[in-house]
Length: 237
Image 1 (cartoon, one colour):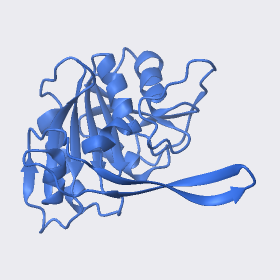
Image 2 (cartoon, helix red, strand yellow):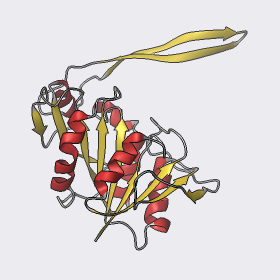
Image 3 (tube, rainbow, N blue to C red):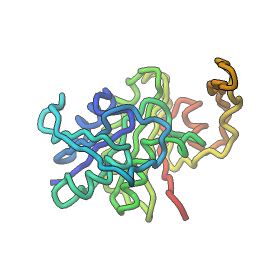
């Protein structure tokens, strides 16, 4: 039986994590190791200079071995690989992330950072993401099919599968696009706004808008046009 480690960056209480654990159970025995709190946009941040706490938790998915840590998503995967899953997992599933991991967002994503940590250990890994709006219909329709297609599909050294589900109804979804490249299009415009001034101390809040024009063949273009995006992401050359 396959051993599957499931993690995320939205925290142990994330609905997306539980949904992914249920899907993972269809493919083998599942261990969940997830952070205690939200770690979005933390990329591949890891803990080096202090201990990381890990403890078991009751989990809403029956039959899953579940643990929470005080560390980052990358820490969760590393500890899961090295110290939690007996003999190490065969596969790592990361997500289901609240918010797309496409285009330049990938460099910030701690879901992808966690997946890349698994890739660093040469473990076959799939990252799953969807819109932050809470629309799950397309995800729920296609995720098991895609996981089945990808779980044994080869990856190169330091590569992961990256899957994103569009924010639309099942009827509006146009299907699945495979081999999507990471968009190199300009994705953000904006900067920072001053929100408070207290003497010499100035507080800033990030303010940006996204560009929804993606080159054909990219993950951004697929999502804009109502397709599920499936592609490989490489950690480094």
